[in-house]
Length: 421
Image (tube, rainbow, N blue to C red):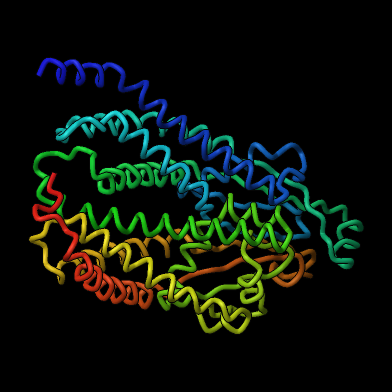
């Protein structure tokens, strides 16, 4: 008893230092991954020494913050732009590091009271708030851009027009969404970790919630690991290593989790147009770089590369493995149909998160004296959005089928008492 009291006192006394380590560790890890990914994507060539500001903007978008594009081309010209994209490699890195930092001081505890957990989370949130403010105020810069087209360039020289495009953050929304992101990371860390303490009133939810959450998070991480292996193989055999490493360090989960939903049968609508794009595999760029919005699904991808049908097989194997692990970690009293429901709900929630975070909407346009019309001259667009309800329906169906099958496969290995701990 005395050792436990001393441990609690030490935890309370050093809570701020541990919270600072968790927040700083997450920020440093996110900054390093963002910097390496932007370097591989060629962002170090941006003018005016703006690379640090671009790194800050990348970290802001990684936690759901808002980056606004703005332009100034004088009275004879117009600009328009917008950006909504989440670099999920940076997001995942920060979530893993901060979640580990949050759980580490609690690893030797069996039960923790709600006030204690709330106080520990509040320390991290307070420091995270200061970090978000610093990032939001740093992530702003303005660039001069070339008009490119001969007609637009001649008009620009004639009238002395030097168009500028800049970016800045919406500080209030960045702080609000960043705090919501942190809350989601901390709650998910408690749900996924089988050894993390819960308040006594929530222990009854542990047998049904934790195995499903643990299995689905492992499924998502497995998709990222498989994507990493494929990306490294592509870099080694097909060249263009810088582009491949840009995909890995900025958008690997974006591509891996998009592939997961497509393997489930989901359909996305998208378009890539103009002089810029986002780091993505070449087959995706080929399907999406069309004059109109394209349909992205198994059939459309198979027209360019028939190997995409293997996504269905990979999804089936991964989901069965997740269902088997979930059932094996659950108490024996839970029936097969309950496992099916648990996995279906968890998978649908995970797919909903993927749909919200993988979607992209980026656009910039410039016109001079009406030439260009903010979309036909110097312009570019990247668009990717899911057909949400059909995708969620497919996730529920896959979860029910594989959850039931995995529960039947796990009957022979489940421990008699389950894992009520």
